[in-house]
Image 1: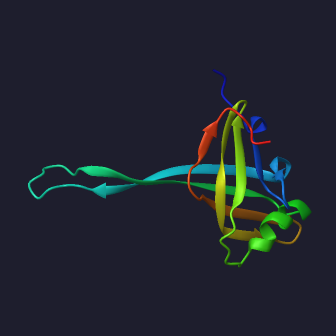
Image 2 (image 1 turned 90 degrees about the vertical axis):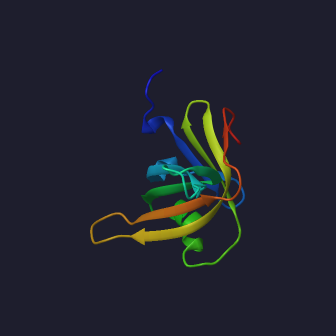
Length: 136
């Protein structure tokens, strides 16, 4: 199978009321899946033993600030909200990851003679779906 490139991917997130592609405005997407480990070692064990704990997934997105990205992320900066947003990351043709996220961190950056940029951290609330079919 051929390796995938950035041009193969897409990232969509709830805009006003529909999934909005922000591919044209972002320069990086990271997805990290984690699992907590629970130590299950006994006093006489010579090696540690573990049980699988809770799993979780986070997304990090970096890009340029414009009316589209500011409309999605700017309103969340410094706000405490329990409202989730739907996200869909197309890793490559026929491979999609989607779910509901809580946006946990929004950062804006900029300096003289440069584009204003943003970064956002999102945590999947519940299950991350891995599928071959797009949401929209």
